[in-house]
Length: 301
Image (cartoon, rainbow, N blue to C red; front, top):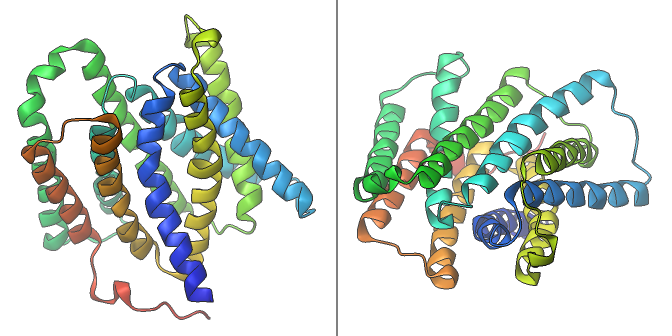
C-alpha cells in the first residue's frame, strides 16, 4: 500500500508538472501573465488554508521560519514561477520546458562553488552535454533572437532558472527541516500570490477582463489546484520516502511529457535538432546526478 502511495506521488509529480508548461501557455493566451501567476498562487493559498483549518493545523510559524519561507517563496515562486509565466507569452511551452530542465546544472555549479558538493569529471561531462543541448536549441533559432519579445522571453527563462536554483541551494545551505509542509506552503503561496497580484496591477497596461477566455481561466484553475497544491504535496511526500536525486530523476519525465503535449495539443513544431537537444539535456542532467546507490530503497529510520 505504501509503495502504491509512493508510485502515485511520483507519477503525480512527473505528469502534473509535465502539463504545467502547456497550461501556462494556454492561460496566458488571454490573461496577462502576472495575473495568471498571482491568481494561481493566491488560489493555492486559499486551498491550503481550507485544508489547514479543516485539520485544525493552522497556526503562526514564528518570525524566523516566516523569514525562511518568504525567501524561499521569493526565489521559487515569485522569480522562478513568475518569470516562466511571463516568458511563455512569447516563448513556446516546449522550449520553455526544455530550457527549464537545465536548472539542475545551475544547482550543481552553485553547490560546487559554495562547497556543498564535490566537483567530478563525470559531472563536468554532464554539464557539457547540457550546454551542447542548449547550443542545439539555439542553432536553428539564432535569428529568432532578433525579435525583441522572444529575446526578452528567453532572458526571463534564464532569470527563472537562476531563481529556482538559488531557492534549491538556499534550502540545502540552510539545511531547513520542514516540520509542517502544508503550513509552510500556505505562507509561501500567500506571499507569492499577494506580491504577484500587486505586480499585475502595477505592470499590466490593459487588464481586458472581458477577454479572459473560459479556456484560459480553466488552465489557470488547473495550475492552482494541480500544478501548485497537488504536485507540491506529492513532491514533498515522495521526498520523505526516497532521496531528492531519485525524485528529480523521475521528474525529468515531465520535460518529455511537456514537449509531447505541446506538439499534440498546441501543434508546436518539434524539429530533429530539438529532439537531439532534449536527449542531450536530459542525459546530461542524469549524468550529473547519477550515483550507483540512487535507485536502492531508502531505509526509514
